[in-house]
Length: 129
Image 1 (cartoon, rainbow, N blue to C red):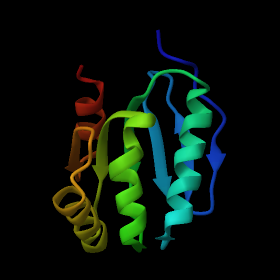
Image 2 (image 1 turned 90 degrees about the vertical axis):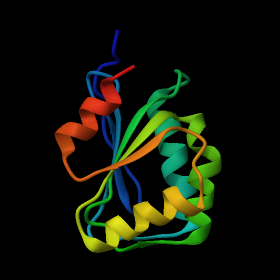
Image 3 (image 1 turned 90 degrees about the horizontal axis):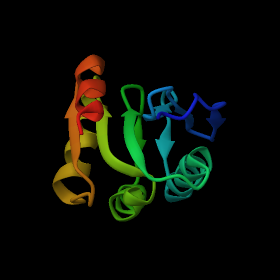
Image 4 (image 1 turned 60 degrees about the horizontal axis):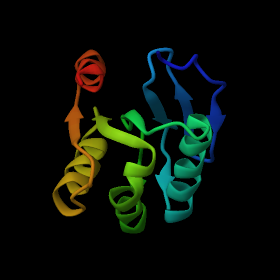
């Protein structure tokens, strides 16, 4: 049974939530430049939302993001399995597409990760077992 939707947690660059059907959502704020410290704060926030429960599928809406440090990408690639079973990167802008491609190509995330331009398809992929 899915957890009820949690109250959002706001970090410097993101709004983090858990949907009624158990999907974590990280919505990156407009024009955010993500640092290593931001990545750690987001990871801690996602763990807090899970409240000791198992990892869950994660949608990262990075359509409005402006940049991400190499250290932040490395942190996510190495630690995402603590809070996520798989990750859908929702992109739209040229910057977000480049960020997604670099993350997937160079950082080799340890959990299944796909990039999407369609939010519905991203959620559908996350819901598939």
